[in-house]
Length: 473
Image 1 (cartoon, rainbow, N blue to C red):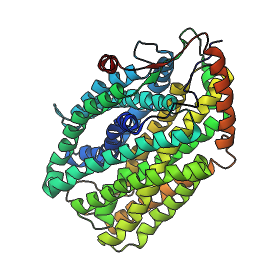
Image 2: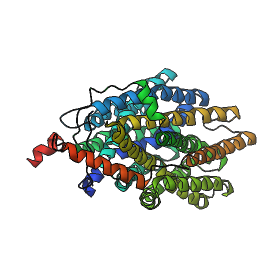
Image 3: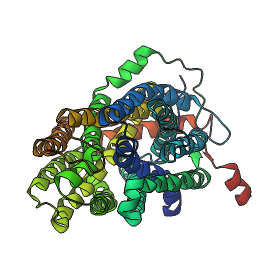
Image 4: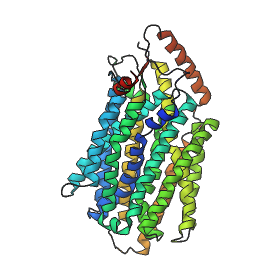
């Protein structure tokens, strides 16, 4: 049996400069989280007149199809062996794919039809999988310790939040006229396409990757895959992550409709409130990652989910058009929501250590593939189902449409109630969760002993990129 190696308890802490460089792909993920979920569905439904149900259905169908690719990609990643490392090459491969998908979606080069949206969404999501899976898997190897993972994934979340904040500045600066013409969406697309190669290059060139022993000969069947899904710790994370993605995703999909039609905010003000929500995540990621070091990741998630639900429901008491009053719960929501993805990803890395101890195999990319598949399905449902329900209550999304009071009330109920239900289900999943700081410390201790025993036969070392090696030489 091949025993994989991982960073030891000493020397596996990235310097601040390298941590900052490694976190840069978070700019891409954060910017796209807002642009894809908040602006793009509305762009195709309102600007191109495709209809709520049609756009929601296409988003949902593409995600369901795409999520089947993630386990295959994750399995291949875990078996990859190259001169520059295991995950670096996949991160670099994902850059041109995601950039092409973003360009064709945000800056359409042909007549926009359902087929056009379907195809380029599929290309985009494949690129997104390559970026997110390789980056998260690399992060789990870079950070070997329970609390160090809160630091690394917290840094990624902070950079991701900054990316989301900066992308929102574009429509805010361009104003209402750009909103109506679609120029704001095209501007966001150009910004993301430019950032993709820069962010990926910084991470790939500045971060060392620990070499691991070859596991390409090991067989992995359907039973092995199901066993990993049904692990009690992993199953809890998958269900919780699904719910903690679906709740905020549902809110994001309907955000512009809710704040414009139900709360009486013009597009620039609504975007500014969203900017406050996203920007609060920077402070939230810093604070909540430190809280997780004190009380544990799963308990921190439960606290954040409860606070998020209360904050969302408090929006109903804010007077219509009252920007300063609405800004307070939006700040609280953004502050708390920043911990959902950050801590779930860090917890998957802990499960990866438990799997490696039990099986002697590196399966962390496959574990992250399970999470990204769950996340994709949740995001697809958040757009597909919310748009379908919104159409069912008689809401008209077209620019300048006047909706009836009953349609607006339906919008409010759909926006507020459903996210709370899902977020609280996600929090409930962590009652009785066993893989805490104490248990993980025991696992890491045993892994360090195994790695020390195999060190005489194979010194894994760290793999820099060829460019860094040439500079250092």
